Image (cartoon, rainbow, N blue to C red):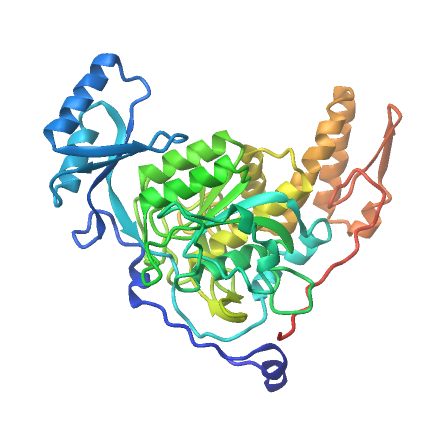
Length: 471
């Protein structure tokens, strides 16, 4: 793509990025023989209704297949078991899965970040326009009271556009248990920046959240290999949940695995919600449609499915994922493409919803995102776009609306009904916000403002914009 000459001088400078071509295959099915996995390791979860006799039968089955050791993730109760003979991971998992003793069993597959390489230049952030970020920022630009976990290849903690939003005191390496989070290939710095690069600071780019507390968790297996085992991903999700994360983003392959579902359920039970990239195979998949987390596909500048974006019943929502300008290690910036960047953008919008309404629940976040998404495919929830293109402004308004409704629920049912009627009329008529600020209700001694971005106050929001300059 091309840019004006002056814009190149003031906003852009080239940066060379080396990305492995195998990232393009991150949507590959677990059934493919070539899919790498952790040798002699199987993941499973004991059935919640298992009896004492069932547990004895399970132990006998495990020992008969050469069990060496096992450890359990305390929160999600996922068991990571190792066996004597490498090469039988799929066979042992199948035996366990059919035994009736476990909820699921599967090998510990090795999956890669869902990134598709593209031109590496600084650029303007077109995606904020397409999802109405600026209108959302009229209400909130985020807060450091919201904790967001990011499970990825690592992070550049010294990047001036990202470092201030990283909670390095909570830094964790889910692969080896240390606090070493050096970025193995730049992917994590990019996804974290899409979600929470510092905004309005006169340099670089703006994340969906200008202010946020990111729990940085590295899941890469080494500095030379950014791939991660799904057991490490589950460990990251559980760590984030135990440290109070309201939102967690996971921009890797593996959306089809029951282990991720189990970890996401644990997170959700602790008032958190997982967002995960749909994959970059560019084809349809029959993956399970897990309801414990949100699967995010990618769109392009024209709000159509990106050519690389995987699809299927498991895709819940879509967001921009082509040429996303974001942070890159060593004080640099880069264009990235992939569902890896659609997911943190959507997760960032969810974090804005929490900032606007701290009492919002995971169910309400999902309802807000899905019900306000722009339906760009077939009517309703479809396999290409899910519920549609995420709308930051509408989603944040939804979150604020819940505060108003909860206040009104303290009043009589007739007042609540009248509020909903007036608000529906305002939205249907598409009255400009400056005009709707004059619509007030004075009932039972309580004054409530009803607007197209409703807030229980009489303050006109100040328009905020990110200042994007080259550092």
